[in-house]
Amino acid sequence: MKEINASQIHEAVVKAINEAACKLNNFTFNKLKQALEDESDSLSKSILSDIIKNSCLARDEMIPMCQDTGIVVVFAKLGYDAHLTCDLYDAINNAVSEAYTSFYLRKSVADPITRVNTLDNTPAIVHVTMVKGDSLELTIALKGAGSENMSKLKMLNPTDGVQGIINFVLETIKEAGGRPCPPLFIGIGIGGDFEKAPIMAKEALMQEHNSDNEEIKSLELKIKDEINKLYVGPMGLGGSTTALDVFIKTSPCHIASLPVAINIQCHANRHVKVVL
Image 1 (cartoon, rainbow, N blue to C red):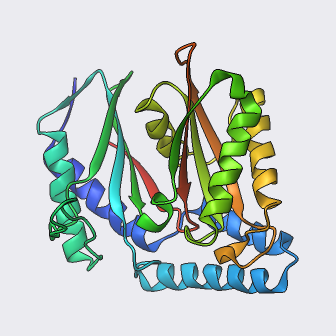
Image 2: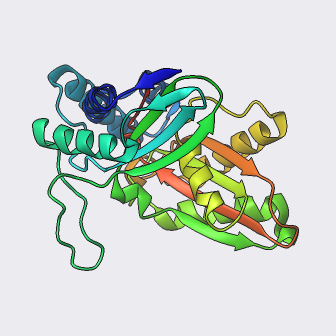
């Protein structure tokens, strides 16, 4: 049985946070470049060009691409045949504390009632699932509040069907306007129950390709097309580039319900995957 210790987790998470804060992943960077080519509105093209320049500067200087360096969200997949010699949550939070202090990242986590800052950006939001194998896979995201605050959950009626899902997404994006700093990535969780749908929506944002299920893929592309017809555009100032991509995760649900969650991510789509 493979053993994974605290120092391995600590080192990996610290490095991943620094990389995520300063280096836009190739998937997102290429989406932005393609959007710049496809966009016809002159103001929108200018904004997209500035976003790309900002990303390049952040990467080259290793400085945060956005002043909101987010709350840390971790999706951990722990293999059945791996043995942790430490508390996973403690190891992750110790790494978050060091990373946000050492790299001078803005510490944005506070008590929800007193609003007193925790001073080291902890605790992280950690989701753990068990999988086959002997490794620990960590997908580490820095989630800013501007886009997170525009996210929504709605318990639709089953009779609302697919069109009801589409309508809910379009209403959410239209109402959000420029506040989540478009262009956007949109994660959608459909099914499960009240708490399952939002987790699926957030996990969907970690994807870098459309669904392998043709029916779901078709819905992803349709929703993306409909969102871009809203003409919200980059930073909400108009243009055909509102959504860079849409990702959907589904799960069976109760016959009497249709939970739908929408988790919005701005163009600073910061996530890194590491495997120990």
